[in-house]
Image (cartoon, rainbow, N blue to C red; front, top):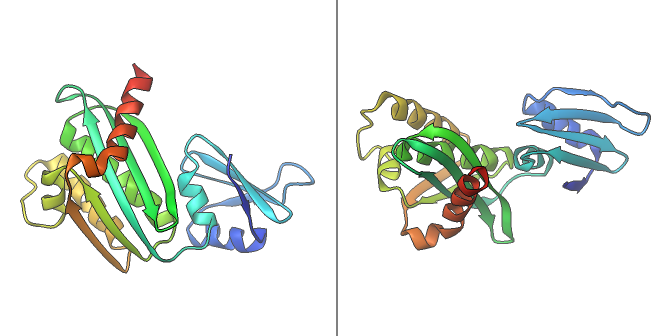
Length: 198
């Protein structure tokens, strides 16, 4: 359960600027509470406590943004289509900012790769980074996002549009294909999510 030492009024303004609804607290000690992407933030004097399933996006909105992040993503599907999961890691020079793995349901491997990229970019955008360097081992997705290859499948085309919308939130971005061993942590998180659901 992340605890963010901050000015609760400034944190509230950041949430409201991002379109998150902020409600009154439930007790005399709670200044306010807000929910976003499956997590809840509760403000107290001098701090905000975040709880829930995936706290990464809400924590990102509460912290001061800026700077550059390296974003790694990987989707996994056992069967094609089959049970699928996404994994992502957001890293700066200070270390891992956020990481996660999530079961996605039944889909193709390419769709799982796109879903992983979307989740990774949502987290990076909520953290307020100015610049992202995205890396993944799915050459098809990388080349489609860069516009080098056509996206003929309507479902993948829709996800490519969403990825480009997210990338437009950053002042600068690039996406590159890397070998699987460089993307090992995102791959591990995706596979762990699949294993946990089995």
